Image (cartoon, rainbow, N blue to C red; front, top):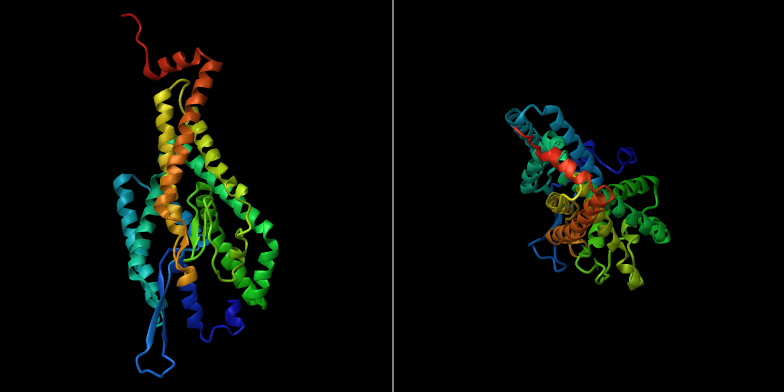
Length: 365
């Protein structure tokens, strides 16, 4: 609206297209920007360049997922009834997505129809998660996995904040070089804010050891980083530079360690002392749950925002999910076993009593 009142849009339809495009981008719908140019020799045949944009701003995507989960929770009414109602709602939502995509599309900006269909499936999945999620949370392995994922998210947020504070001077310089008016500053601030959750996912992938890529020439990982040219975006200015001390590169690796310990503690607390097999299975299930959440979050946080310097943004989805699954499992299982052994050591009579309560004992006939 600020851009419209300042004359940045020549027609109200342009403003509506921008709003619709942002809404579609929040659903991880991809776009293609078509650029037509001619050669310097004046050739009749134009040069057509297609620039892809497939990056969801998670600052808008996460609230949408939360709202869709609440919708699924409200519509939950038995297994069959919930599936039928959510399927019909997903069809309506799909029609809305395609209608907005048709209104946003122009000869120079084309929403990708395939990504619209994938977004519709994501809407249905979020609704199903909201409908049946409360029942899943009662499973000990799920609770342990959610606690571990919360530790990873909090640690990733702390890493992003630490980078912002450590490179505050570079962030201010990037702001000064990028924009000079109030409208541009507001738009840039909103853009960086909605991309902060993406940066949190990238920070978690760095802590996992797999790292992430920013374009074709820039990669950041504890094992080694390469640096190439990047756009002057304040969020990119907060990244560690080539002068990062190698000894501190592996410091974020403590994050998966803490997440594994938390998963193991939750797994052990869900069972009586000395329940070795049960706590081990809970710990393994928690690691698998963290891997699935990592798979979904890294997929949403990754994408492309152009060619060359922004051709690839984010971590490798499968490698990061596999790495975190293995890391959490290797820490959670021993932690759960040690914790359940310690609980039995503190109260050795508790295990037999609780075991009899769980399996039942029969008296003499």
